[in-house]
Length: 94
Image (cartoon, rainbow, N blue to C red; front, side, top):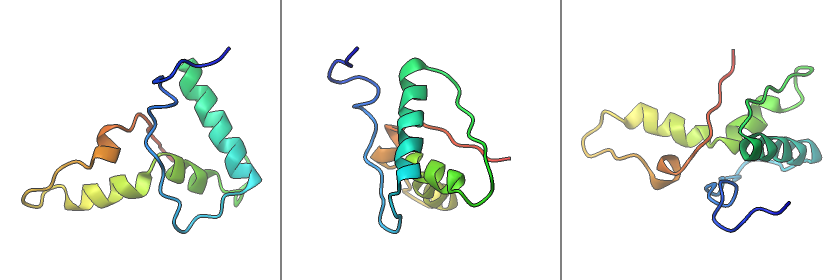
């Protein structure tokens, strides 16, 4: 089954991967995350420490953009960046 143009997957904002090495495991994570979004499920990643789960999730969810905005959100004339307004991804770590 193919997705029509303009669906949830196509609307995902581009991710900033400036200092991030895209690996096979990260591509598998992105495939998993896209499937979770497409089928509207809640996904949980687990595994041994040091595999890159948190870093992949932070990259996918643009968590650095959220962190930067959260620090400066009370500054005068601070607006939510367009990439965050269009984001439909949440990330939580225990």
